[in-house]
Length: 290
Length: 285
Ligand code: SF4
Ligand code: SF4
Ligand code: SF4
Ligand code: SF4
Image (cartoon, rainbow over all chains, first blue to last red; front, side, top):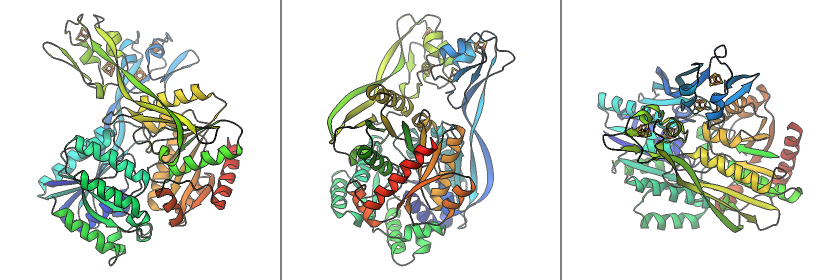
């Protein structure tokens, strides 16, 4: 089984539109995963039926039992994250600020602090309208540990693909260059970077490629809206050539993307001739990389 | 005044808004305008600004370092909730990437066997923008460094100390709904949520709204690329009584200016739209 991970460094380059299109084109042959657990969007286009829902406990949080607290204030003194507040001489923990380090619970003289597993999100196994399996998650609001949740989704998606003898996993990677995207990339067979020819897009491409190279993955890129700034497109092409980043395709600026999105269709379904054909060509080329 | 600009997700035009709104404020306000890029993983604002006198300052975070007093009792490894310490037969191993600098191991070690080590996590850059009363600060995390929150905190505190509470701060926040965006928005007077009127935009906006409600922040919505999608975002805001501060229309012209790293406030209808947005924010704070 091979895994293709699609990333962009930053959001807004059209990464999810491509992931959804490839997922559509691959049909039943692929398992799909969405690693953007902070704000997963792939399911909006694929509108899957949820088959199973699971709870995700990531990390712990402290909580003061008000009746037991004698108000000594030690917990407030030691908390490095300003999570403990004094309310009428009793102490309370602000769940949003608590990092879950457990220090307070270890030093409370009267055991007034509970330190418990924290429900930080949910994840789902679902079936798309193309009859492929999509694994995605929703991190709770203000919850951390997205890297761990990404790793969970990845493990589940890999297992599902292997159990069902699917030879391909297509994954919509997490944004950014931090812990979640690093978790998204682990064991990828090929990384596709979606970029756009703007100064900021080019800047993000350089940063994300540095990360991809740092971990030794092979990568290619798609330049979306290439005709919006042909000078930068040229620069990206030269940069790619010098950095062993293969250009998988160049897609022109087109209204088909927002229009298909509003109808909750992938661009290959909406625009079968023009953009759809170009995206299909990218897909054929990608398959030779895997 | 402290205004954070946030969005559930990247790519909605948050940076475009933060930069251009700051440029706009610089023309109409007497206060110092300070644009602070808190998207420390990938700060982008600088691309749209021609900052001069760029100054730099290295930022560090504190992690434990074992000294010779250690008797390998193993207590620290037991304490650390983030698995950042392993005690082997002959030494204590620290994994800096996992350490949240909570100090539990340092202060609870029975042998007082820990020193504190500073490790570099990134840099703060700051400078003045060509016109005289507009300043720019950016926090930038080192590649491979994963702890965004302490970097955001230091960048924010540095900006406030350096330029004073009387300045007008615009914080460009990181995307998402987890700790980094919370750190970036939690002490602001107002949060501007930038969204697009598409199904993606609406979905992400709902998450951002929930986050702001949880933080009990005052907030309003700016709709970017207005005209591409449908009416769902407008209906949602109306139903939930969320103020729509203004719109930036969808146009290829704006996308082209953006791609060249140019500002858009010279466009008359943008200026007018920003004027109204500012007015609405003042009324809501
Ligand atoms: S350390 Fe325990 S007893 Fe003291 S204030 Fe905190 S919760 Fe209350
Ligand atoms: S668990 Fe750690 S972060 Fe949470 S309140 Fe206690 S000391 Fe503070
Ligand atoms: S708790 Fe202190 S003495 Fe014990 S292993 Fe850790 S550093 Fe060494
Ligand atoms: S400071 Fe806290 S997080 Fe860091 S190693 Fe010690 S116990 Fe673990």
